[in-house]
Structures are given as structure tokens and as C-alpha cells.
Length: 325
Image (cartoon, rainbow, N blue to C red; front, side):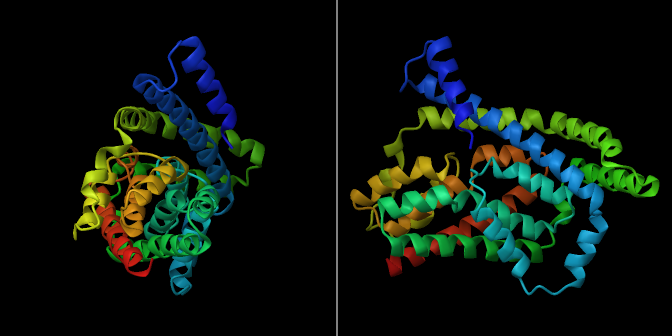
């Protein structure tokens, strides 16, 4: 999807900057430029598209529909399934998360998407089948969807909306104001676009510093942390290997396609599959760069609650994997 960006970044880093492939600095810089560009493009497209959608489907109507209709948890499952078909890493999922929040989707439902999207997608599924087997792949996919669904339900029941930042609340107020204007004056799409465009630029200006800082942290980790750094903590005889692997994985940052070959190496070296998969889930599902991006949307308390809930669910999944695989 973004191969053309990667080709340009490769040319820039290795030809223009004349850095050698495999150098720590080259890998970190390549990662930073590529991910920053990709996420800014996603932010622009998603926020602009959601602005158009929201102008025709008022926030209050979406909220009222979801609160009045008993879907018995299907809304969380649907959000998780939508996450499966969006091939994003933990940071790339944030733009859609912002769009969902701005569109009035309940916070717990948006969390289900945010959790599942980086964990399970068609790229990860294809690599999983190639590196392991169909049974392991099916169990992983199902557990990833269940993980997102259950975590979303838990987070919803904690009533965390009060921990959204004032910036998000201002964005929601502006979105509601624009919608009232659109409907009161019965404006055409041509008349609505300039107003939506102004709001998109305002949102981008507010979040760009967090994107840059977050991806810079991810770039440093990607370029300078050696792959074998954590292996000594995942020994099969260590009863606490799963929680240790999960917690140590959280500061790292990669997508599923980048970490799966590492998982295969860990398994070959004797690391239990459940422990290795918990490590993978920690790397792709949560990250410090993601936390930096979310800082613009959530208070530190909400980010901490989100991370703790997901980490606990990943640890439980890791132990379950070790029992059944």
C-alpha cells in the first residue's frame, strides 16, 4: 500500500544521504522518515474523510443509535473484525482511532479496533501460515479478535470518557458546531469542504509534534536495539517468562511483518510458542511511540489504564497458547 513511499525513502537515505544499508543510523532514519510520512498521510486522509462522513451523519445520531440498540457486544466484535482488514501498525491505527472518536463512536468500541488492527491483518496471517502452520495461525487470529473484543468491553465498562484530553473535547464541539451549520443551511458538499479542510488543518497542527516525537522514539528503538536483546528473559523454565516477555516488548516498536521472523527465531531457539507470541503481541499491539501519539487524545491515566488492560489480556493469551500449542 505504501511501497512507493518506502522506495522514495530508501533512495533518500541510501543515495542522497549516502548511508550504508544495515547501519544503525541508516535504519533509524529510514524508519523515522517512512513512518512519519505514512502516518501524516493517513491522518490527513482519515480526518478529511471522517469530516465529510460526519457532516452527513451527525455525532448525536451515531451515539443515540449505539446507546439505544442492544447489540450484545457485536459492536466490539465488528470493530475488531474491521481491525483485521486494516493492515496498520500500532501507530498507524491511531489516525483511524481519532476519526472514530471524532465521529461519536463509543470509546470502548474504538479501543477494540485500536487493539486488533496491529495484531491481526492479512499480512500477519500470510506470514504466520508460512512460518508456522494453519492451526497456529487460526488460534492466533481468533485470539487476537477475542483479545480486542474483550479488552474493548472492559475499557467501556470502566467509563473512561472523562479521561479524554481537552483537545479531543474541543474537536468534538467543533465537529458538532460544523454539523449544525451544515444542516441548518442545507449546504452542498462543495460548500462544506472548505470548513472541513480548515478543521483538518487545525487537528493536524495539534497532533504533528506528537507524531514526530513518537516516531523518533520508534526509529531509535528500531535502529539500535539488537534483536537478541530479550531472549535471555524468555527461557522455558521461567514461570514468569510470559509477563516478562510482554512487559519488555511494550517499549519496542514494529509491525507484524517485521517481528514475525524474530518470533520464528525465538521458537527455533527453544522459546515456548505462547511466550514468543505474547512478545510479538506486546511489540505490535503496544509501543512507546503509540503512547506518545495517544498523549494528544488521552490523559496519562487513560493511557496507563489502556496499556495495563491490554498487557494483562496478552499475558493471559500467552499462558493459554503455551497450554494448547
